[in-house]
Image (cartoon, rainbow, N blue to C red; front, side, top):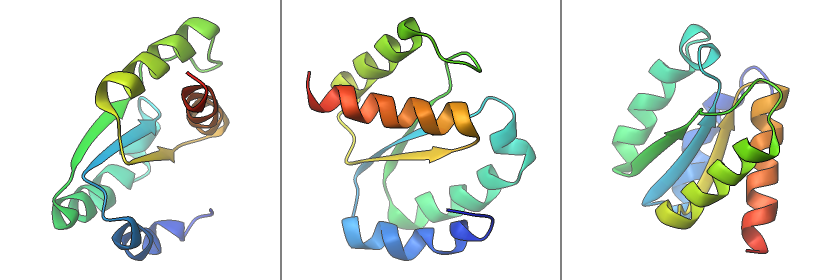
Length: 102
C-alpha cells in the first residue's frame, strides 16, 4: 500500500506465478496516475493474462458487485489486484469476499 508500493509488486507477483490476473481499477485514474504504464511492463514480464474490471459506479451498487462476481466466475483469476481509490479497493474486497462463498 502507498505511493511507492508499485515498486514492490514485481517481487510479490513472482511469489505467486499467476497465469490470470483480474485488475480492478478506476476508469480514468489508472491511466492518469501512471499505473497503466508501470504495470504493463510488469505483466509482460510475468507472461500472464490480465483482465480489467472497471465497469462500476464511483460508489458501487449491488448490481456492480453482481457483474464483478460473474466476471470472477467466468475468468477464474489466480489473483485480484486493485489499483485506485476507495471505491476500487472496496469493490475488489467485496468481489473477493462474495466470490469465496458463491
